[in-house]
Length: 432
Image (cartoon, rainbow, N blue to C red; front, side, top):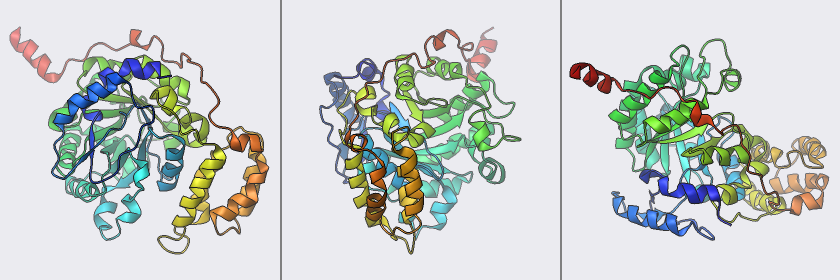
């Protein structure tokens, strides 16, 4: 059965998220494809596609659900596992610093290459140098990502402090607008910004709106991922910045009201598929999930295709997923030199696949022992999987998630006052 959330929502997706071009790459099949309503809407957008290369439409679903970019977590290996579980979730890379791309131009595959099966996928870059951001986008363009995103939300001292980018960029919306314009001018795909609702004492709703208005006015940016907490650059660790500042979902929903021409994805504090569908029913353009998708990938991602997109799931069991991953993993070992990547790096994304299942604790203990001597993913799995009962290994996505409130119901009754841009305020004063 098609998802009620998707059926109601499909007609309101911003145009730029329906159609994305590919450069000689094969499109995904979408079993039991999208609703007729979506197909008609999609076909009428095809004429808007303009690209300098020979292109094929990637008829991917829009970004109703995405997995957040997470340093040291959303690498190629995790993304491969995530795609085996969900065919339609949008994947984001770890942040790649623009200077890394520019200065490693002879070794780019190590930082930018990915398997075609990972589409749809977004590259997140970080930086505060216009020239390097533009050059990084140009170099990344040949890898055919589906979108390029600029990190304006990371509160880490290495990024926002010494690096002078990440969340600190929100202090300078004019620069961000110029940076997004430079990035867009050097790639063939849509561009987006991931940011907080504010930084330090610059946390009013009007200041957030000024940031959105300035960036979107100075660039073709029409997609913002909003982490619904502010960032505190002094005194809080990145981990604390994900928990201590209060969530203000009302800011996010007010942005939908005040900038109807822009697509906004909500992020922060969303930990299960029930909350995802609840947010979409409340009108969210899209939902981004972070650590829950890594810490509990089977239950978080396993229902995305059916519950969010109304499509059939992969219907693979965890045994089948591991068989597929093992073939991928063993082909990757040592690709960039001895132990680059290592068995331990390849196994890392698998360690939460049996979250809360019988045998999980024993499996992790056996995994710890096996990682000390196993030289292939195949030998690792052969040595450890007997800890997991067959009924767990061979079951598919049986749970039918309940449609819960998820903390989003009624949020539209709590918005801040409507935003009036500086231009509108000036015109109002002149008119008076």
